[in-house]
Image (tube, rainbow, N blue to C red; front, side, top):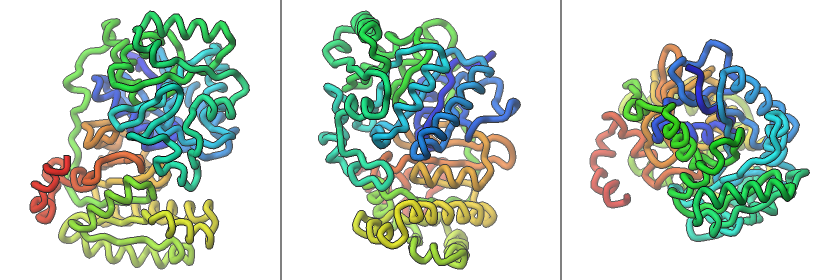
Length: 439
């Protein structure tokens, strides 16, 4: 049976986030890395998520990659399509959310899509078009300091309007509160008025059911992963989905484990700080890495020693002041490239040293790692924290992977991930009560 839902994600961790949401909603889901080959997707998949690395590339390249993905998903027989974006709307005034969304609309021969970036489970909510992260506006959340996509304007209608040629509208919360019929009518009215993309206010998980039901017949939906729950419900109501209990079953292989943390987000920095008290840790110096491969080789020698007794954490998650100093020396683009290349080399070296479970923090870092390991697809399993599941690589040998957005996860995320299925060091066992109290 062909897959029901075809999804195009603008980064790797965002793809995993959406795939995990779909699995939680009862859809057997696979995630493919870039446009897949014709015979690589399991026949039992209800949803296919194609993970691109298109969030920060030139807009024209992002459009080309997304259209190629759409064409493959159409051939695969998908009935509805999702353009998955970040729940913090990571982009610039040039794109890439607006240009890609408009290109997908044109390719699908339609001219209206709802845009639902909220993810209340991870404290991302939209009200009157403004995006809140926790209790603060997006522009006060730390995202205003993002090195590639600094988000200084929390009004998503304004942000998206600067990226698009067509008109951008708003589906306000009082409309959502009035139910599916009201949202359907509002979408039709906005469409008639010439709006092509409409930001949807969203405050609670239950809002997704209303919003998704209103766009059940829409060929394209744009949004963060939360909307996936509602879209899965649409298919279930039509009798097209069953086997909810088996969707998340996944056998992560036993073996050595490591964490590669490349994100400099506040959440990842806190996770690193928590983990270094319990595991051996190695901090990467981008300035040293920029001098050549010897720095990576030295890190691998040290990491192999640590792996003899348990997991190891390798990180480049600098504080904003330190990151700025590195960028002043190397330039922002080269600094990012140097770290990504190092993480890719480290991933290959760690796997050669017997690592079969790898936890990766940061979208760009995750993309570099899966490409370095030549992983073409993933089965999605149970969540560790909202939006972050364990995954299992397709093909042999199978490898357990966690691909975490830099902004996601609780402070003890790395500890919880490494404790999964018995992968628990003595020091982690000692802090079990601490983990419980921190939840």
